[in-house]
Length: 451
Ligand code: FUL
Image (cartoon, rainbow, N blue to C red):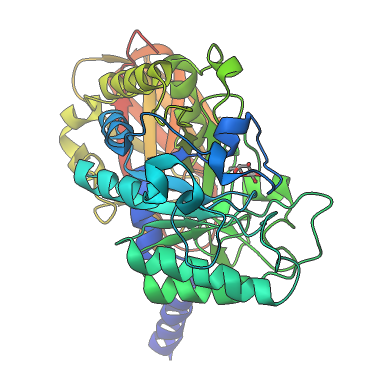
């Protein structure tokens, strides 16, 4: 009888453990990219606007030195893994010669209307070793059918062109923005999403509320100090979402939809000459990395091409230096010296160690004290996200001293602090969701002096 009870208890625990939402392999691959790039480029680049109204003449679209290779090479050199291009923004102008509208590059002077920006950028990205994705604005201020059911067919036709004629896609961006005076339009998001899933199964889909990745709730590059990869989407839709809720996520969330932090290297999303002296510095960008990737999110950094059709020199310099600083900081994981820390420093989620709530786990870094000022922690999210609160301490002067108390870890938590010297750390999970908590990785680093 006792064995039977034990057996049922075991089954109940297993069932419970599997209750939590888990990441799909495409979501995991997405999060592991960590830094991806956004490319906002369209008629706005030439009109100096952020939102076009759809009356722009295609004749103004005339990048004189357009060079997709320059974009892709610069992004690759700066360590980005994927680039997302605004194939169509709210103004409705298409960067590819869509069969379904005249409002596109085919009526522009660029390459005498024979060119295709989407094709050139997609090809250049692949050649440089970058993944590619696109943004196709549902809100369309040019298309006459907008506001009627026929627009859903129009949108799907465009979506199909992009999904079938340009090779493999890794992300499709569904923007929820709609101006105040936009027509009352009922978008068939379910239909759009089904089409992406069918035609490009590797692509994650972004919108305020997923289905695969969600908005972080602001455009300032701030991941939530607490950031769950799970949310409840009921009652929300693209454009109709609670930004504070999205920023934090929800430990009771029933869907795995991690947060994407989209932010621009300049004040605007599109290029404006007057913002040439307002490009975020490499240090500012590094800080964004800590605030996004370091808070269980992903950094989607916008680098807008200019009127010549090139990424501006300052932007290129700054993203390169940003990467060089990160590389220097995270080059050497000092925890690799710890004899018993092999499983925690091998870069694998599935060689994690179990942690028991309210039981301190000592992590021996070696005999001699090491000096460092950064720590990276990763939870085994293959089993879901569980840690709600934890504490780190370090051994110094014959006693344990508190280093940091924090909330979620998830994919990654980065901690910054004044340099310490120690040979031992200890981690205590103070609160966790049901099931087995597992620590997958620990990284211990001395930051670059250029941070
Ligand atoms: C917003 C848009 O309205 C902006 O123009 C930009 O594309 C940003 C990424 O998303 O909703």
